[in-house]
Image (cartoon, rainbow, N blue to C red):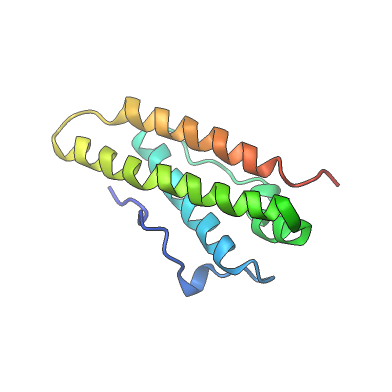
Length: 123
């Protein structure tokens, strides 16, 4: 099974069209990693909402404390996901079932991501 990179490095093809830059690239990497965790957990791929797709640009437009909190939150989620995915792969490599742990990691990601999405004011 192919799993997204866990180093959350910024790739040139992940740059945000409106300049959210690194934030957009990190957000995209997190989404890819979450999709891989969902697959390990046996869940169907999540269809991204409009807010999920535009979050980096929208939070950059909001700016201020919300942007700072979002940036820190993305870093925090990455810090959770990277070792989590590595652990899932290690469990799988030992021939054990990673599904329960993957479900837990996916739910933790989902809750943390929802908290970040809530930083964008309703229109």
